[in-house]
Image 1: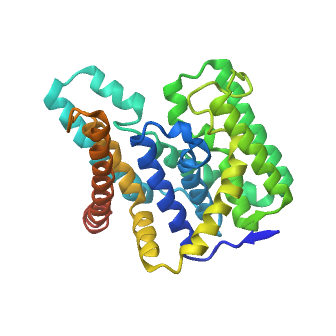
Image 2: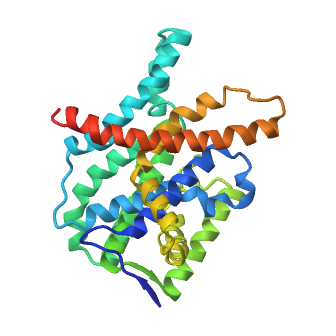
Image 3: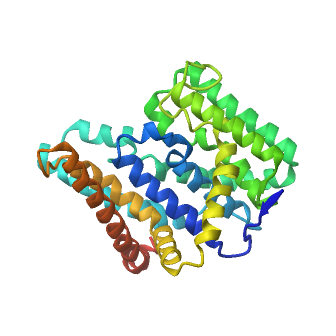
Length: 329
């Protein structure tokens, strides 16, 4: 058995490595079109579940955790709304005001790839504050049964009522099971043994089936594009994938360059996420060269560089200006 102990009382450097990996996967997933042929759901496709696991761990490790709209606004909502003004102003200048401008923003949760994530984060922050007192009182088995029942119940309900795809995309339904797995991280760390490896392989089978050999499974699982973000797929993420990442982290943590890059990317990961939401649609409207392969080779590195540099400076702006001057709002 291998047990990876996670720091519950302070800074956990391994999470920097996970977040750096996850945000790079976000950029790859939104810019490189042929990743599906590489088994992408088993590696780059689980970036949001990784972020959610870390969010759940940080909330549930604390002796007391409460939802603070002020704290969430400073860290999540203000930067998101600031960045969203760019595509809104662009659309206003390009097409003028239309009802479609507002409805598109509301239905999408914002403009750009991944615009749903800030709203998922917000919902999970509320849910974690509500669930924490109850999950701490329950046993491992009882909590598993209750959380699985809730997850499956929500999937069945979504199928029965015909929940619109756009609304399902904005709701945290598909990530609810990760709260339980984040709680297990707090209680046990990342445990790799025969049981968890077996669950991970079954989870991998579910991912491959949902992604490559899928047939409709309603009402048991709501039929949407988010097929690999369902509760059976997450055992692999929380155990085997993170175990592999930890092995790589251990092999490379002595390298000062990798350590610095990981810490910087992790610190700015949310801001990088916000910048790529705006940059990618803009860059896809620019034709750099007639040859589509050369055009791809120019556009993709530019998206990475602009997103990372933009995220770095947005993080500084948020810390040095937004939090300072709007923190009291």
